[in-house]
Image (tube, rainbow, N blue to C red; front, side):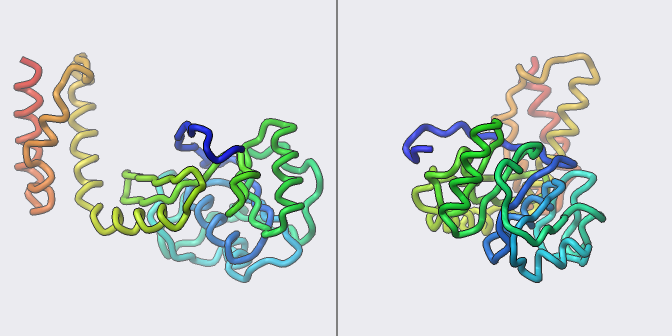
Length: 236
C-alpha cells in the first residue's frame, strides 16, 4: 500500500474471532497482547517464540490496559484458555486464509511479502510491523480509558510521532472520561426509552456545560442533574 494514500479509519470487533501473528519476537509480544485485550483468538507462528508469548499461551496473568468485551482479560488476569495458540515453525504459504486479521512481525522482508501477498489473494487484512509497503491495514497508536479509545495515526510515516502523541493524550485522559461516557450513555437510553430521538438533542452544549468538572470532583449526581437539565432545554 502506498503510504500516501488516504486512510479510512475503523475499529475492528475482534472478540472471539481468529487472528494470526507471524513472528514471535519482542515486536510480536505487543501485537499479541493487543489482540488478546480485544478478545481475539490468536495463533502465533514462528520458529522461535518469546517467553512472554508462551506465558500468554499458558494462561499466565499478564500486565496491560483494561479492555472491553466479555472475553477480554482485565489487567493482571490470565487470558481465557485457548486464546493464544503457539506453533513453533516457519510460516506456510496461504495460511492467512480463515483469519480476520493477520500481523507479520518477523523483521524478514521476504516473509512479510509472502504474508502480504497471501492476504491480497484471499482478501484478508494484513499489517506488517514497521513495513508500511507491505500493509493493507496500518495499526494506529492507541489510548484506552475504559470505554474510551483514542487512536493516533501518521499513515505509517512516523510511528515515533504517533507514540509521542499517544503518551501526551494518556496523561490528559483520566478515568473521569469513562464516567462521563457512562452518564451520557444512560441519558441516551432514557431518551430512547421514552420513544424520542436522540439525534436532535444538543449533546455538545451539554458537554460544554461543565459536566466533566463535576465528574472530576466526584459530584456524579450533580453531573446527572445538569445533563438532564441541558437535554431538557435543548428538546423544547
